Length: 259
Ligand SMILES: [Zn+2]
Image (cartoon, rainbow, N blue to C red; front, top):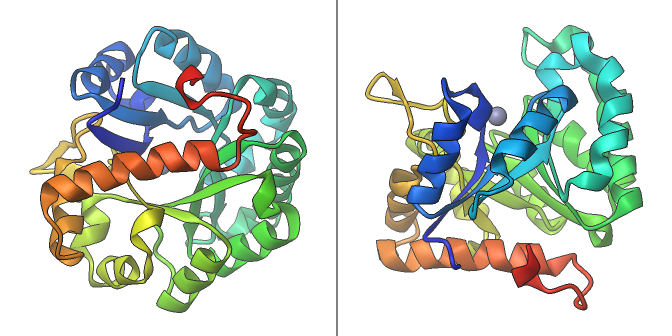
């Protein structure tokens, strides 16, 4: 069934009740990518999302956890066959994680090569203070015909955003990103057919409480204002973009509806 909304980066397993968070996405008819932060978390997410119509699970190894969990790359490799989606992965060069940057780079590089090797993967990528580095590694280790990249909550410069567009990246945008001047500038650089929405829940808060699972309504409204389009047309554009993205790197013999 066609979804009404898209939440392409949510940490459903960090809500108090994963089952309830999945149910909320289904109720809202939000096609949701439930990213995970360690390979060990994948199995339970996959099990609980199995019966869900709208929730898919990403196999992740979060850059902020690489310092402690880099050993789980072996499990990542083992599980990769089971997941078309990879995330959350990437690099974080913020002050708290800068010390592990070299290790992060080697783990991320490994993840990119493994994903490119299998092909047809869709990646949700974190790039805090490391946009250029992420783009360099993508260019080197993840040929655009081997999968698709979605940059989550991109906070690089306008120039870096332009380069990402040239490399074929999509952008998943949340309501907090749209509240910042840099986020709005980036949105202007992103072609409409490369846009997706996300909540980044439960990290993104609204009125002091975690944003609802799959609640991207304000992100859609924010994009509509900035792109001078109607809310309904943006809502449908984003759903179309997800459909196109899922088809783009896939062998056309495999049906989209089988997903
Ligand atoms: Zn995240």
